Image (cartoon, rainbow, N blue to C red):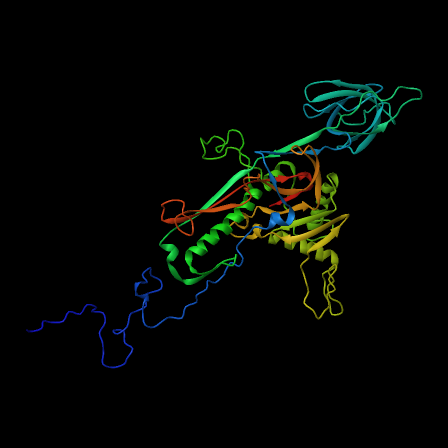
Length: 485
């Protein structure tokens, strides 16, 4: 029986009798720029780098709150704390009407506050417009006026009346009392009050899903992630990065969180699309009740520029709690401004006989100068400075670049805890998370599906779920400083 012609199944391969490397006798490596790698299976193995190049270094951003605060459980939908008010009595935006022998002062106070100026108390009244200061004695008890105001009469110690002062925008504070012999004691008393703040936790969720087939798919790039995950299973890298990203979200939500105001789009969303309340993060809390400093200067001239700006901040801290130790978390540009400011005060000129001496650094002419500073003291305050990676990262605040840093007081504050019914000490900045004897929602993760050891459904996939319920407490925010552009 005659044989027919042979059919060449792969016309692209043309054997040769010579042992030669020709384009016609081996599989081609396709163009790396194309999406087609079907011809990767060739007899000549290319030189492969199995590990990824970590071109962005450590990409995680969390760790800030662990450095400056603590995490504590709670069992309610809301956390409430009370902060002390000032001890002494002082008012701004005071106005007056003069008579021949005294003056009637009108004081503006927040609605619902107690009238605390009493007969025979002594006071100082200051006129910011003229710089004049006079002292007086309260002669009549305050008379209730319009809502949020009260009036009282006072006589001047050094003049017939207070006519030398302007009639509006005065400042006044009580410094003592003055009684005649054989008179009755002080009429009435002052009942202390406190200011109450609260915050609500939000539920933060995420999920990673991989189908069963891909869990057995081997890649040629070795997994290498920040948490130490290794191997050639690509889904391991994806799951690991999902978890790292979620852990960053836990901190970023506490820093960036915003309460949904009445009438806002979030508050008006129906059903379960949004919580409708949000949570107050650190930035929002400081903008609401902290100190915000805009435009910190980089010019390091004594009495002006960066040092002059910083002295203004110290004066504001003096008006608040005057906490001695503070931490500065700054972006790169502001951190360098601080370095320049300190270096200028230490003397940064260099000549042939002497090298720069920066504070605690004993720099010599033969050694490399250290131009960075991790701490310094100004006035009665100590400051510890560090870079905040979150403000420098190009995919987060480094992209927006309108928050330049934050000053956070070190130590703890004493507050009244509504749940415990007593005064407790807490870090100024701390996280509260939902937890009870049956469920801890600080950081939950679980697997569902029918892959990866879980057999909870017929879904041919592995679903890794993440959940946390938490909020941030920013206590004594008047001692914080937010640096903005």
